[in-house]
Length: 377
Ligand SMILES: CC(C)(COP(=O)(O)OP(=O)(O)OC[C@H]1O[C@@H](n2cnc3c(N)ncnc32)[C@H](O)[C@@H]1OP(=O)(O)O)[C@@H](O)C(=O)NCCC(=O)NCCSC(=O)C1=CCCCC1=O
Image 1: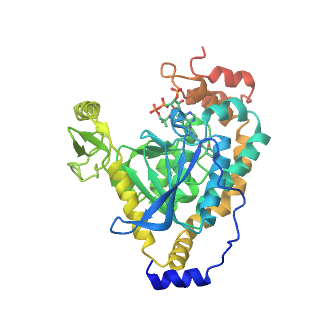
Image 2: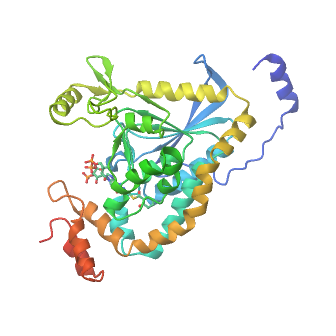
Image 3: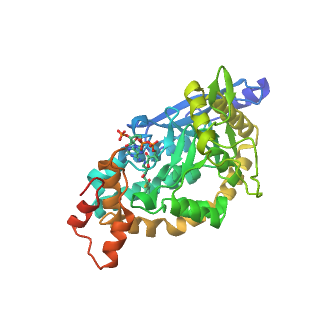
């Protein structure tokens, strides 16, 4: 700060500030809240200003969020909103495997399955978490440190910007695991990537690469993360060196197959993951954001959020009720299948068995659900 401005601040700023936060900046289980010094465009630390890094910390379960973590995120976004000295929120997670793979399937299978009134309460918290991200008083950057799947994709899309390391996959999981992607994805995807691609992602649940996420417009920037022999290389599992196939179809960002894939996997084994370029890109974006008038920036992102916010507000309460009741049958079955299955038995049900049974008018009995579990004879 220049000396004249500094003197004016000393003479005019209140000596005691009112605390608008609802809760102290608490540490909640599974959520880290860390203030990091903000930097300007030259990379210099700006004294007295910070960016808050809110990190999901459940790497063993791919940073899926438990009920406690959902509560922690609501509080963390609220605290960041109220912090006068915070410029930007970086929303990320611990490790390099996953940003988040959505709701915690163990908790879903072992507590919420068959318990719709409890899940309805959980969905109150879930809805408040998404609203807390969309309503954050600071711009929110989703730093995608690894895969962003299911509810992870939903809370990531609620952020204002997405910057990803290029080994991260994106996508939905709901209809394969007994849910519908109505925790934000069905609201945000059509706006962000168009109705056709949204339909593909929200129903087929096929993961797509960071390169494709960038092309579709769901991610503003990607950076390489794999270092082989000391040099960064693009994700070797994905086609990145050509745009079209012989028929003129776009193949850039599609997953490799056959020999090309095998060679990619070999290269992957030789390399190590280094997220320093991701951090550089995120810091650079934070520096660009801090180099703006604060209220004009806030008004701009508040307006630009409106298409997402309007769609979310229109649907979130109905979605809550539907998801709660769905815990009686399909979610009860799908999340148990993921939780009780393994690599050998598989973690999904035989969908055609269920469809054949329902086609004959079979009711949803506990025995039907047991008969559908992976490995059931
Ligand atoms: C496709 C996957 C994301 C990754 O697959 P893969 O790379 O093969 O890893 P895994 O071996 O499957 O997983 C590694 C370990 O992490 C555990 N894990 C992964 N995801 C979760 C999770 N969401 N909850 C709890 N634990 C998780 C996994 O069990 C492994 O541990 P283990 O000890 O068993 O070796 C794949 O992991 C996957 O599909 N995951 C589940 C994705 C999912 O279904 N998420 C929930 C979607 S629904 C949702 O999020 C919702 C949000 C609000 C609205 C309603 C709603 O449904």
